[in-house]
Image (cartoon, rainbow, N blue to C red; front, side, top):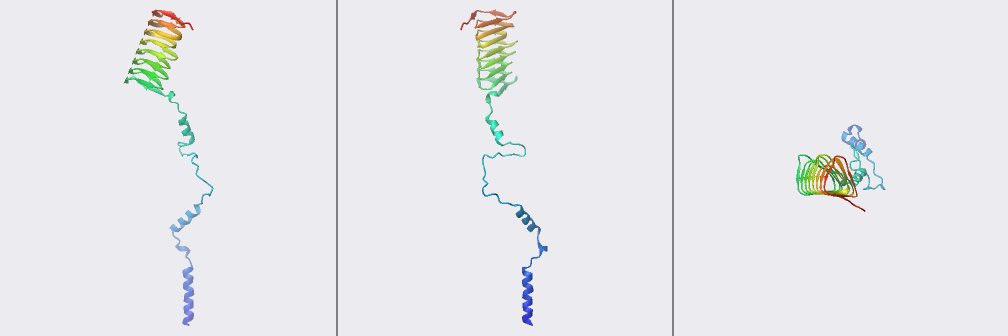
Length: 213
């Protein structure tokens, strides 16, 4: 009898030991099972490409397009502004366009266009210039067109290809092609150009030389 009891006891014990109760599954075990189901291995032949475009939820901030646009940036299209309440003392050298409404005490060398309605005490050398309601004490040399509009006072020599004058000029004027004196122009100095146009009302005190090619 004891032998039969011992055998039955062993069978029951081994059955309970091998049996898993589904009611004891914890929330942690469930989370592990869900996590395992959602993980899928990456294909073995898939490799990271450094040239792949990086996208942002706010737009392609760091994408190829953004970086390539930066390479197309042209500094010569930039405009440097000197405001009315600004005074610059010293030489200015720039490739940018210049817009001067303040005061500059020093020479200006610009490989672009200059527009001024301020006061400049120094020589100007640039690609082209437009001067209106301004005061300049210094020589002005441009590669192409020099346009001096009304209410401007220039004390210095002028040179360029095309020169159109209003206002008061105290200095010699030399143009490779033509000079036009508008009706409100008053020039004290010698003029040399291939062609000269003087509107009615303009004043000229000086010699005129016609250049021949």
